[in-house]
Image (cartoon, rainbow, N blue to C red):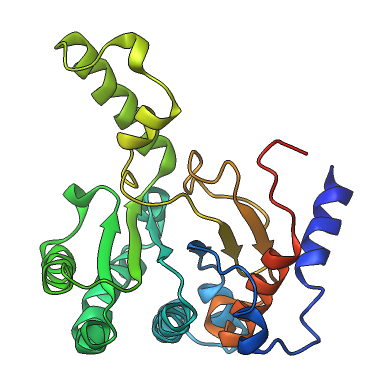
Length: 259
């Protein structure tokens, strides 16, 4: 199994030495929904003898350019794993900085997002978010609610297991109260109880920094997603890397269990 994963990861790197043209990518199928686990900010900073927060700040700049490129390519949804339910275990100073990043990003780039017709959304448990973080996110969602371009979907204080448990609890309650019949429960109905209920499941998952795991991210939604892993640390991830990921996606045959 380990050798298979190494081979799988190696195939993801196959295009790293060749330049992919945007025009060539546009000839193929563009993933409707791309999800990214943005990993490696701390290691990027450590390599440069900088504090970890410097890596997070640099990674914020990458969010801007990858959002812009995804929108230009016609991607419909870009979901970014910004902060997991497990990230609260990190040092308080780092957590406090991470909670300020959405506010800084949105205060800085919201006019640009509005101009480019991007709609901001969030998935995750809002209850634990600091008030200043929540205000910035809610303002961005309100100001971009009518935009029709790319949906920029931040997974903030998000954990997939908690999301699934919450969905089960809500379905159970609705059955008890007679709003739905137990026999009506199927995959489609279950998906409607998830935080991504109005979104197409991801076609492509990208994880940076060389790690090969999902880290409690969209476990239900990624059932038939194509995975692309890269050793590139998130602050070094660029437009060409995104094109490489989409190119690899376009070379794969998606049969969804068929032949």
